[in-house]
Amino acid sequence: MPADSAIRSFDDYVKTLYPDYDAFHQATHDIAEDVIPYLLESDDQEGIEILKYLAQPDRVIDFRVDWRNDKNQTETHRGFRVQYNNALGPYKGGLRFSDSVDLNVLFFLGFEQCFKNALTGLPLGGAKGGANFNPHGRSDEEIRRFCQAFITELARHIGPTTDIPAGDIGVGSREIAFMFDHYKSITGRFESALTGKSPAFGGSCGRQEATGYGAVYFTKEILAHHDDSLEGKRCCVSGSGNVALHTAEKLIEQQAQVLTLSDRGGTATFPDGLDQETLAKVQRKKAQRQSLQEICEKYDFEYHDEQKPWQQKCDIAFACATQNELEKQDAQSLADNGCRYVIEGANMPNTDGALKLFAEKGIVVAPGKAANAGGVAVSGLEISQNRALMPWNIDRVDEELRKIMKDIHKSCVKYGEQNGTVNYIKGANIAAFKQLSEAMTLYGKV
Ligand code: NDP
Image 1 (cartoon, rainbow, N blue to C red):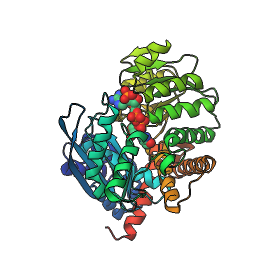
Image 2: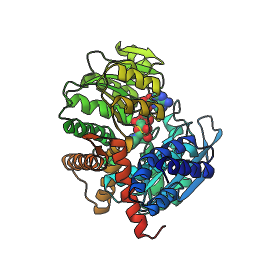
Image 3: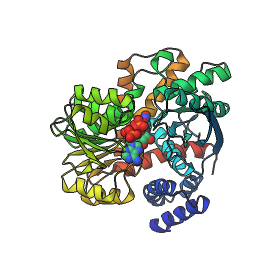
Image 4: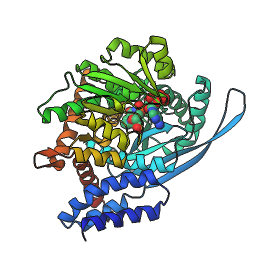
């Protein structure tokens, strides 16, 4: 069967299973586009069956979360955990608290997580979860009560050898602390059932920074492969959360120029490049839940209401906010302004239209499953430290993180290099699929 028809048939199969899950279709299609031609070249029909197997998660947990707000009223939200695949290890992936959380989003994130975790080379399966709860504007006490109600329901489904959630959008170290404390109370066990914990109670140092730092380490590998370096590169960063701010921090350390940060409201621009002192101010204020607009007003930074960062002239774009944040017209403006590399700090931040345009223009794209794998990698290291009851120092964690990002880069080059150029998306997809399919074949899954 020609590759195009085989991809269409796979897409139809997924759409029949889950007709309304468009973000999930986008993620499965992106993998199929690279993996199916690769499998057909070697007439690997079993591989196609494994891909179809991966189009369904192992299990979906969908639960009610009742909790009391500051007015002593009961509020009800939906909580979810999609335990996607545990061929390589216990289910592992973040929890997201946002009003946009639904099963469509969590299927796509869970599916991506399986491939990302496979790339790290660590024994981690894939999962994703969260709730349609928006923490913005809630008091600390409300968030604590919500976290307790959420984990009361989820606790029976997680554990150090079954499923180990971490943070994601709307779930940072504060929320993990609330949930871990309550997990301990319910189960009576101090065990590695959550990662992203503070080093004060069993977390790994460097976990908070790992996704952003890892994305920069991965970018360094890409640039080195192109006989280039980060020094003096003009970088646009989107977002101003965990991933974006740590990406910016590491970029400044590497003497790159960080020109932008953004949030849901708009974009802050720093025409001469952010410095560490200014970044620290933004970090402090963001931790107090202030918007970029408020921060820019206070410190007199340039702010562009409702604008994205992609109109700025830059060499490298770091998309670190959320899915589908970079659309075709944004890609066009980046290309017109001479951008040469796009790094996905977030999960699936580029729309299909944007990706097609980057491919046409020869702009290198580092996919999220490779570029942002540093977070889950250090979560894996956190589990190792917990099991051994032996914390590592930051130098050791950082060295391991660099090594993992370097190895992921090597895998991408191995499966993505053709005629002297590297297609990182293809390389990451095939390398991860091979890892998963080897385990699933040995299990006799197809
Ligand atoms: P945070 O919640 O800390 O930050 C998210 C940032 O993105 C915030 O600045 C937020 O704005 C902004 N944002 C969210 N939605 C939108 C939107 N619709 N339009 C514009 N801006 C938006 O999340 P993280 O930094 O942890 O995660 C960012 C991305 O990275 C996500 O895709 C996540 O899945 C991915 N990721 C995270 C990892 C981690 O370790 N944290 C690991 C791997 C991937 P505002 O400040 O206004 O809320």
